Length: 181
Length: 217
Ligand SMILES: [Zn+2]
Image 1: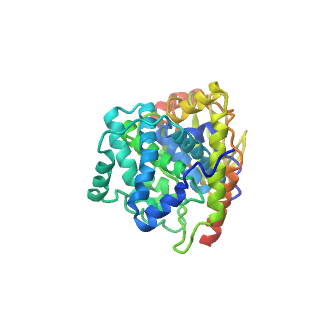
Image 2: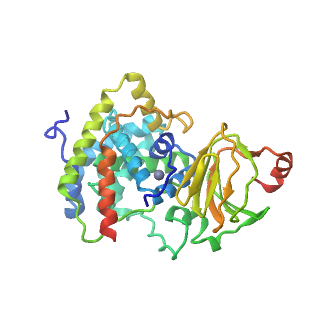
Image 3: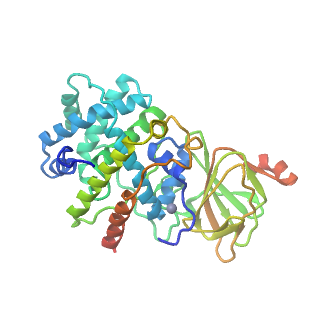
């Protein structure tokens, strides 16, 4: 079981970055995530210098776009992954990245704290389940995410241990749709 | 929302989440997700997997001074967010990601006649797969055709039916080498589709095979 006391509450750090422009909170997020982003980029084929440059870019984007982070729709690690992925497409593949039409929070909307906590817990559980996958299957999933597999090489039956995350995100989306009416 | 019957496959959503799809496929995925909250939630799932893998990735030490350099970058480089896209014209069938490639509305598209009342417009993307819009007059039957690679067809307006069922706005048909189909556009409204393929289509009839190079499809 994930231990909530062991994992820092990254959503709370993001709140401090967004609302208070808190440099200490930014430093803590940087210390944890920046070396992992670098590891991720190098595994995806980036050179040392390109990875360093991308990491700084990703972390600067995190600071500038902190107001766009919605903790009821994505965990902090998920959000950082999407920023790093987009920088990788830009730097390594030199392609545009079409993004879905955004569903933005209304000006008054604040994410529900219960939802935020539940999503963080479910994300941690998914991480644990991934870690327990058989080695062979885990390697395939990693290769897909490090962009080593083409879409035709990604098996239809991934065996990914996905369960509750989708319904949690779905709930958040329904609430957003409702708020926009 | 909620009436979409034909969705994206897991491998395509994983490829999009991972950022490994050719640009043309990514645009079709992003356009479908703009219309489909079910696939939006599934994408959220697959991006969560990406976040877990990132969190679990072996850290690589940064160059000395990387944190200070990042603070400097924040102070000197303003937010590079592109300006918000223009608001959607009323009644456009094009969701936001497609408007960035095709213009705001059907009227802005530079169609080319293909014969039989069919029109198409190629949209520019990076190599790896090609992208086009198709305009099929209501009631038209398309030539029987197979596929060499993977073809994704997303309906934006009207509807068509073929051996795999009925496809209306938001529905996506994913076809590969195994599929031969003869789509027919429904009566009523002209059918507009966004199609991406990683190989040229091949038509089965001799006439179409000869015509194909001239049609540019
Ligand atoms: Zn869908």
